[in-house]
Image 1: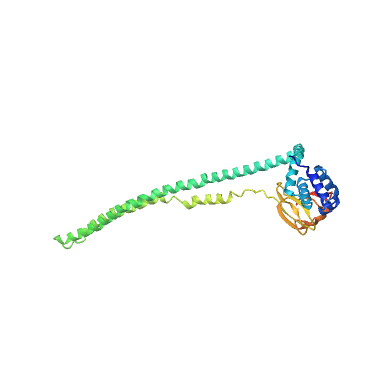
Image 2: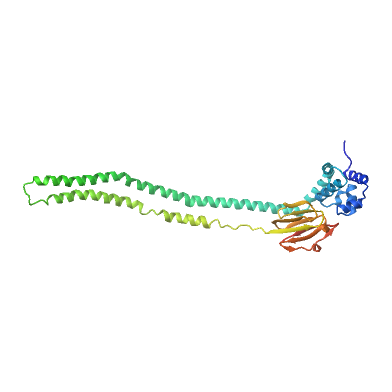
Length: 317
């Protein structure tokens, strides 16, 4: 079973409370014409659906009705009006322009991310991988030095044993005056022992000397530090402060359309928000605003158009 229209329910409850529409309007800080439009179901006279729901919810609480049930009934009544407004928005050329701008911004972000990823991949393939390839041959050239070291030690041991053996045989010679004859043989034995060591050391030092890992790594470090310095898009931020001396519905949206404030403010409340400018501000009761400051500078409400104690304006740096 369908319930009565929201406006009729509110009107009956008001009459049962013995209140006039002027008294309800005064309590809500609204004009009596707004209360009359709500009771008559002429919701199009209220510019914003957000403020309409706020007025209806406060009205329902004032006359003792269930505000959640009233809002649910109001949603069903507003569905045709929503469809009509969506059609009007779709037909607005400014909306199409704004959509194109948002698409371009998203595309630019994707292109920037792909560029950064491509640059990182180029740096890895150009500097990091070649450095690892050059380090591997250096390790392989140093390996034969450790493998040949046992042979060198064995040759040195043989060279040290042969002179001692020759020296032990010298006393058996009949001629005592020529003890120096085994010395040339000892020197001859020592020379082949020392030459392979020097040759192997010289051979090992040939492939190792040209490799300079420090000089190869330096360009990679410099390029990695210098390349990412890409220009970054800087968005301007702003700060908005509003204080209230009575109940007032307020809506504040940033440059991307994100709502920073969307609520009913009470007497003595104060909001302080920051975000990307320009700000789109909607104030439901201008008379309830005590002060407005943007970027720590006072804002004169007289500079903006006020209709039915309601104002909608934009603040930019």
